[in-house]
Length: 96
Image 1: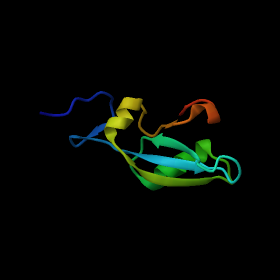
Image 2: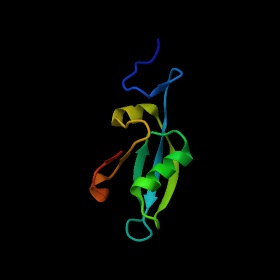
Image 3: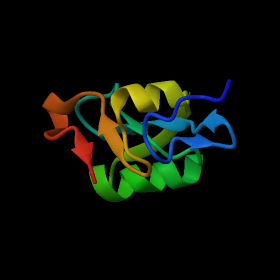
């Protein structure tokens, strides 16, 4: 049985696209960092997307691991977009 498409762009060749968990760590302050779920499967592209939109020049931005397509769909993250896992620290949780 083919998968159900819940959102255009998340199903490719019968499988859900995966995303990445990216962590941003400030040089001072919160040493645990803040995580972002990015709806891009390529680690370099996902890291660059967060670096451009949510990190300061001095921040360390690193790829932590892959995340499932099911999580991307559950969080309703559009392709190429991301959500902050701790919006109270960084303001709005969704970036376009």
